[in-house]
Image 1 (tube, rainbow, N blue to C red):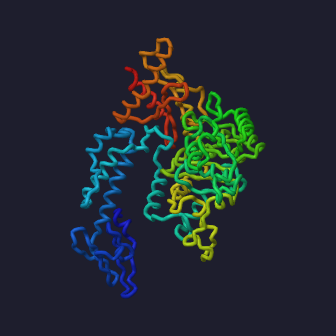
Image 2 (cartoon, helix red, strand yellow):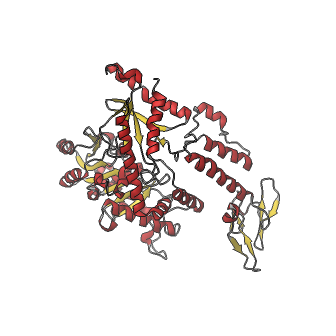
Length: 545
C-alpha cells in the first residue's frame, strides 16, 4: 500500500445520508470535514472543498490533497537523505560551510509572499544536506549519537498528535506512558518499588535546576512566598568537574555563583569526599548555611563517576540534599557489569537522567527523578483553576503539569517507551554493555598505537580522552613550547575532518592539559570497525602536522 493510502485511510462518516468521505487535509488546516477557521472553505453534506493558493476549489472526495502529496514527498526525502544517507558510513557526516557561505546557499530570508510546495521541498532538501548527521556511525562529537528506528517512529507519532502533557484530559495515553517510564527509571536508580516522583524536562540542565530549587524549598519552604530575603546566606557544593548548568541554576535562582562552592577532584575527575567535608565545615564556620550537594555520575569531559556512597554519608551527617547529575552516565544502571559505578544512587534525594544520551533516544528526552512524593508539586504548583480544576470527571492526580515550571510541556516519554517496549530491559543492558566494551576496545587501540597517548589511564564511562602526537613532535623534548605546539594539533585535526566530512569528534583543554581529543561513545550500534576507523582517520588527518 502506498504511503499516501496508509496515511489517508481514515474516513469520516456522514450521518445524514449514510455516506462516508475521506478526511481531507490541506496546508491551511482542514480536519474532520471542517476547514480550520472556516476560511476559504465550504462544508456541506459531509463534503470538503479545498481552496488552494490560486483560489480554485476542488471536491474533497475526488481531489488528491496537495498537502498529502507534500507530506509524502517530505517523508521520502527524510528517509532517503536524512535516514539512509545519514547513517551510511560511506556518506559524509556533514558538508561543512562557513556561516557566510551557507547563508548564500539557503533561502533563509522571510518575505511578504508565500512559497510553493516545490520551493519548500527544495528548502527542506538543502537543510538536510547542510546539517550534521548525528546518526552517522562516525559521529562522536556530542553525548547524543546514533539513530533508532523506534525512537524516530515515536517522535513522529508525538509530533503528529501535537499535544501538551500537562493534564490527563489532553494527553491520556501519554500521561500513563510517562508515569510507567518514570517508575521504571526510579526502580533502576534503586528507589524501593519505584516509589517517589518525577517529570520529563526539556533537557538535563533544567532537571539540575529543579534539583537545586527543590533542595532549597525542602530546607526553606518559606522561599516560595517570601523570597530570598527571608533566608540566611545559603550555599551548595559540587565538584570542579561538574556540569556548568549548576552554575546557571545558582545564578538563575538568585543564590549567586559565589555560593556554589567547587570541590576539588582526584586525578580521574572524581569529587574527593574529604575535600567536600572540609568545604562544608569551612562554609559553616563562615556563617553560611549549606543546603545542597551536587554529585556527578559521568562528567562531561572525563566521564568520571563521583563516589556516591561516601558523598551520601556526608550529606546525611550534615542533613543536606543530595542530587546526582546522571544526565550522561545514568544509562549504566541497566548493566549488571558496569552499574557498580553508580553504587549508592538510591541514597540521593533527586537524580537527573538524559535517555537521549546513553540510551539513544531522540532529542530531547530528559527526566528529573525524586525519592520524595510531594515536594515537586508543593514547590512548583500555582493551582491555575482554568487548567487544573479540582472537580474533573477523573482522578486529578493524573494531572501532572503543575509539578513543572512550564505550562505547555512537550511529550517526550513516548519515543523512549516505544524503544523500551521493543528492547525490554535486556536489550538496553546489551546495548549499554556494548558501548562500554567498545570504549575499552578503543582505549586499548590508543595504548597500542604509536603517536597516541591517553590523558588518563583507564576510563570509567565511555569517554576516551587522548592526544595524537604527530611524527614531527615525537622525538622532541616535552618543554612548555612543545606542549603549546601539541595543543594546536587537535583543533587542526578537527578542522580537517569537518571540511572533509569524514568524522566528527570533540576536543578541548582541561586545567593544565592542552587540547586533547575527547571521544565519547553513545551510539548503541557502534562496532570495533568504527573504533578502528577513529584512530586510523585521526592519524591520516594529523600525520603531516
